[in-house]
Length: 110
Image 1 (spheres, rainbow, N blue to C red):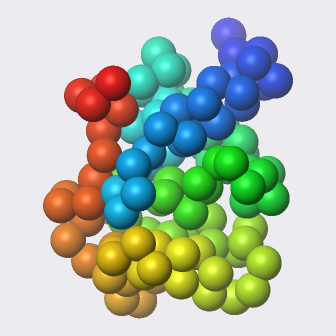
Image 2 (tube, helix red, strand yellow):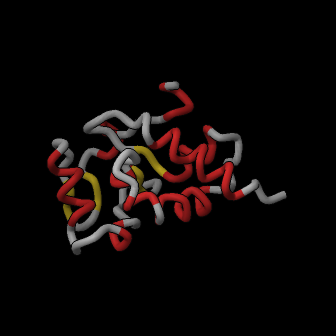
């Protein structure tokens, strides 16, 4: 059964707002936390529209190995990387260096 998109997207945004400065999480980690472990792609769709929302730090949501797969949804070619680097997260070849060190798991942290 597909979750109700509007409510699901809102829940995704609420979790994303809790990601601490200088930390990142994955689409799958948010989906798992929301009880929809197989809905990582849907979390990605929610994040596609979140780049324009100032209160949702969409740049802190990456794929399961730390790749900046959502970077195309930010204005400017390198904005997602620049935002992460401004928080002290090193990015090389569109991938977060020391991903495990920066990873924030809502399942464990909330």
